Amino acid sequence: MSIDKNGPEDIQIPEENANLEKPVDAKEERPKFLKQEKTDKPYWYVVYTYSGYENKVMDNLLKTVENHNLHDTIMDVKVPMEESVEVKNGKKRHVSRKMFPGYVMVKMFLTDESWYVVRNTRGVTGFVGPSSKPIPLSDAEVRSMGIENVRISLDVEVGNNVIVTSGPLESFVGVVEEVNTERQKVRVLVSMFGRDTSVELDFVQVKRI
Image (cartoon, rainbow, N blue to C red; front, side):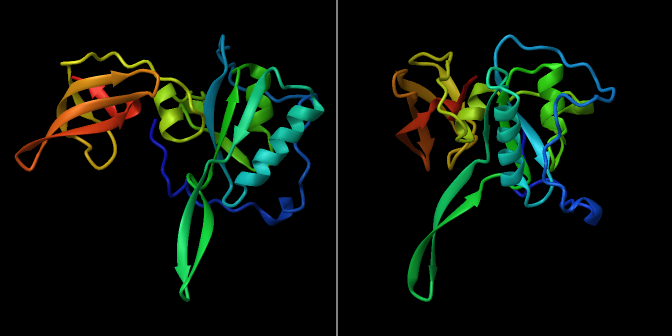
């Protein structure tokens, strides 16, 4: 799944709704919506939000989960952040920025109820997926995006050829020298500038070819 780090289209909330802060009550009469295919385990899903409403969506959704005791259905809600250092007037300061502006990540069992609760949380404009059908993130995407440190099962062995899928060496092809399942790392011998170089990569950065 591809997520635009610049965020979705910059949609502004209509003025007449500007003071509505109360999340939608999951017990209210519900309109018709597309029936969702239930999942047997929780997955991470991505939802679009109004510009600047990521944290409000997260807070409102967590409150709804608490108020309606939905902890067994909606497990977690996150707005991924990244830390950086800025230098201004000779002074350094740490700055936190949203990694994916306009998006919120939700870990949940997909059911009609969870779909309805998330979709009707104030500030949410929809799920990432075709025709309102949420598409879950893969384990590799979850790990690479820093949402959760899930363990990845990598089907490679020493001597296999792999291609680097992300990072500075993206598109480089190499041979696996070592696989460290515990650390979720793989050492690959790649040819750089006419010289073979051994590099260590995360499981999520390589793919068997």
